[in-house]
Amino acid sequence: MTSPTTNISTDQLSQFRRALPFALSFALIPLVWISATVGGWTVILMPLVTWYLFSIIDAIAGLNLDNADPDASDGDLFWYRMITTAWMPVQFLTLFGLLWYVPQAAHLSGWEKAAVFFGVGVMTGTIGINYAHELMHQRNRRERFWADALLAMVLYSHFRSEHLLVHHRYVATPRDPVTARYNEGFHRFYPRVLRQSLVSSFQAEKAMLARKGKPWTDLSNPFFKYWALQAGCLILAVVLGGWVGLGLFLLQAGVAIWQLELVNYIEHYGLTRKHLGDGKYEHVQPRHSWNAAHMASNWLLINLQRHSDHHYKPDRRFPVLQTYGDAEAPQLPYGYPVMTMAAMMPWVWRRVMNPRVREWRRTYYPEITDWAEYNAGKTPYPR
Image (cartoon, rainbow, N blue to C red; front, top):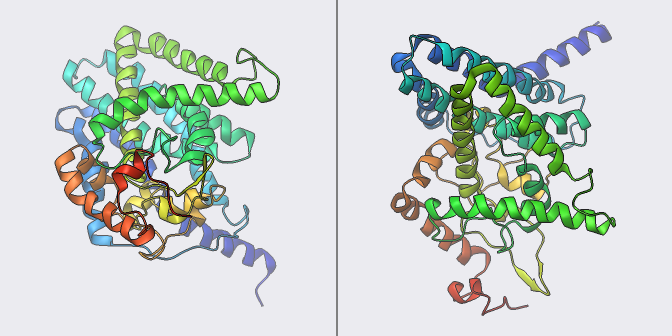
């Protein structure tokens, strides 16, 4: 007869094993240190692994169409929560440790130092901002602060306000800066979203304070916390690495933001929610986000590619996000590593994605015959 203690230990071990593949991101930490300490060709390890190696593994591993129980308790998700919680201090020590080490590393040329921090930016953008995205959706105060800390490390703190107050509310509508329009290339999308998301996030917080009868200058405005955390990171970069350290810090932040917005670009490209009149839109459904069930990149990105379910049920933690078939959500042909590389080549992107957008329109909104006029606001949906 098995004792209760044995049962509990066995359950915990089983949960740990299921969560372990999602900890693959921690393998990137030694890669950036190898790049910094060895130099030479190793400075390109990070993009090689995250962009190309995971694309190859995706092709070999295929799709994961299994869905976990969406009603799993927080106790059942303990090890998954530990992965996202542990990342922030690990990234902090790695980023600022490298900002101390690399500027004074005599074996690294200037170009090698820049390449190392390009790789760091790939890590802080691909993993760090993604983990911040998971943490900012939680009600736990510590997790939300961890999200703020991760975003401050890449000088993109307003992403939390933009994502929670603007993007989730207006996704797949003209009011969402982050929803890429049909035929809008990434090189047009990127400067637009950098400008508009900063303005829209500040205006959303200002409007929320106004509803409480407070001015935007009230200290409860999270932008004051954002600015303080970002200033702290900039000062620490100078203290540890001098002006070279500051330059390297800014380089990794720029790369991280670029990585984030590449992902934002592909997640809703060309998709549109039904306008009901009077400024109202239909409820968000799985069909309003591109879904990808590729196994290896979902391990690396903690199920971010199950984006259709994330927007349908934003409160779900990453291990219980559901994947959908063709009948319920549009499918990306490849995982995010391949799709983000394609997005950098507009002619490739349009060839791959535009036919899929047109098929999506025929499938879900066959009543619209002139999308150009509809998107210009001239033709409403039939009611």
